[in-house]
Image (cartoon, rainbow, N blue to C red; front, side):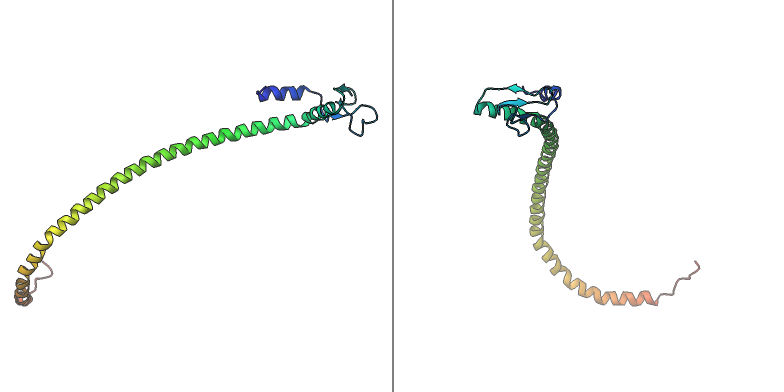
Length: 165
């Protein structure tokens, strides 16, 4: 019987506990130790005599208290398992999204690395052109310095514009 609801119904329908055995000191003078004592009004279910009967009686008596607790624990574990399954589903979805993002980022990084290599190559190809331009422009800059000074003096010599215009 795996249906916890059916087990719980059986436990709830059974006589309330505590159940005990004839080995209990309260009943030791009245019943044999292999007797199952359910309550004072239905005191005796006699099982097989001997050690096996005592073990059976002790097991049945203990089951009355343990079965409801075990039912509660099974229900709690099932609820915990359902919650863990929901969390697992959510985490699996996040992992899938993370993998997609990682693949996208890896592609973008690959593209950026390629672009960086292309730009560096262009820079390296332009270095001789830039150096030649610097060499060509250097004498002109020195000449402009002298010409620039004269131009600045000429602009300063011009009459100032009227502020009200």
